[in-house]
Amino acid sequence: MTINLPTHWDLEADLVAVGSGGAGLTSAITAVDHGISALVLESSDQVGGVTAYSMGEVWIPGNHLAPGAGIEDSIEKGYRYVKNLSMGYGEPLAILNQSVHGPIALKYFEDTIGLKMSVIRDLPDYYYPYSEDGLPEGRYLEAVPFPASALGEWQSKTRVSPHVPYSLTHEDIFRGGGMANMAGWDYEVMAKRLTHDERTTGPGLAAYFVKGALDLEIPIHTGVHAEELISDGERIIGVRATRDGKTIHVRAHRGVVLAVSSYERNASYAKTLGHQLEVQSMVMPTVDGAHLRLAGQVGGRIARVPDVTLLGFHVPGEEQENGLPLWRGALPFLGLPHTIVVNKAGKRFANEGFYRSIYYATDVIDGNTQTHANFPCWAVFDRQAREKYPFGSLMPMQEMPEALGTSADTLAELAQKIGVDQAALEATVARFNGFCATGVDEDFQRGTHPWGALMCGDQTRKPNGNLGPLEKGPYYAVRLHRLAGGGIASTGIMADQHCRVMGWNDKPVEGLYVAGNSQARLDNGAFMQSGITNARGLTHGYLAGRHAAGKPSDELDKALRQFEL
Image (cartoon, rainbow, N blue to C red; front, side):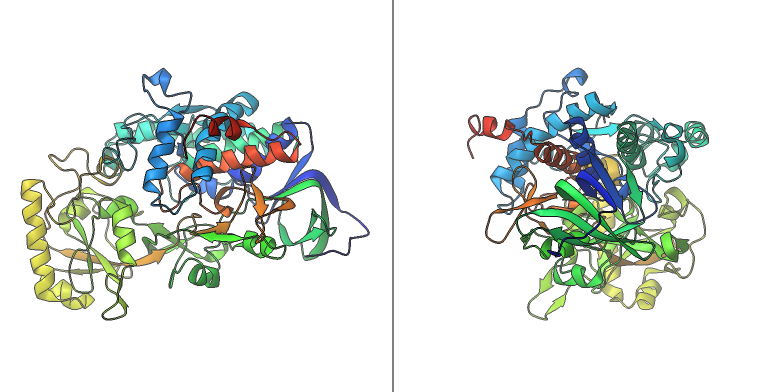
């Protein structure tokens, strides 16, 4: 932290947002719309952040679009859903704050920057129908396709994703048979959108916010690395940064917003804060925990909730920025028919069709042996799976590179090659095949979560879209690696209802805000729902921007008079 004030400021604004994902951009947009100036600092050469890498889902219970689709919901019902599933690791006040302001922020950005969202039909909450407060549809929203040409010179500077089909909406994907049936997708629509650069999913959502910032003439500075916060002894007043190897000082008259996502590209942080060993990452190299380093210098308090290690793999030859390997999440593929996941004992250990089950189980520690009993692990599948379904970027029937996985004519030979117990693997497959015949997984209830059946199964297969026997050689095994959470971290900076950073003395650090994945997940605790992070980003940006402008929201205070915590 710098207290000796610079003699010269290179840039200045009332609000300085560090990070150009959804949270950083929405904080700047809200600030300017409420009468103060703002600028955005981005360390990479492209904007959009992790928002642009996502599927673009925005999960908001009680949103104003659901009634138009004939869906009944309420803020209170959404609050109960999250609170009950947070397992006590969340803070009721933080959960209520997000529940109340999510719908408000959504409507605000529609009215302010022309954000166009639509309800994703037939996409259920993760825990519907297990939770009585879950819904079969209505809470998931996605951006209407965005014409990227509207970004002008920023079109090529706004991120697209190597992970998602950003020319198709969820409706397009579901109509074509889901993620499992790429052959059924409408490639004419895909080609048209790609030709005209009409973006959907995360790239489309991020593009709306970039366009909103540009329309409000908010300066966006790329290639700027925030190194240190500047304080006058009473509050944060700016940022010391570097650009092209030179130091610059950025004045923030009202506040600095830290919105740089998580820390998963920092292996030390991932191990010591996330308890993630030998972890790989799907996101850009700049997601290295800058918010922890910056806020830590001024006494920002951190909080941790239970983490979930993702699983993934690297297809040889695929690279992303700076020549780093492109790691792909295994989520859509592990729950497909003719596919299972086994540990080193050759046994299944969780519901492969619902990632909340298998990813928690991956990191279970066996205290008797002081080992991770379920890691390492392998995806095991047969020829039917390769004939029918994609695996990462490999299309059906495409030859699998030797460096990606192992193949063998028999399960016994496959077990020998990957080093798992032969008899156990054969017995595991035989038992699983029996479940496929009945359509009921008696061990791990695979296929009982409607969300998992839709997103990780084959909709054309009845009675259970997540089940299909392994019985036709050759058989394949792909070693699965730990992946960090795609920008979603277990540990973050604590904040109050206005997104002000909280110190270890439980008082706000004046002039410093934190938003999006940089903020501790006390508004959901142990619970996670795809789309909730994008929702948090736009909500936090809205709250921080309002407070910095001197116009804080009082909606939580109103809600406290209506809800019992």
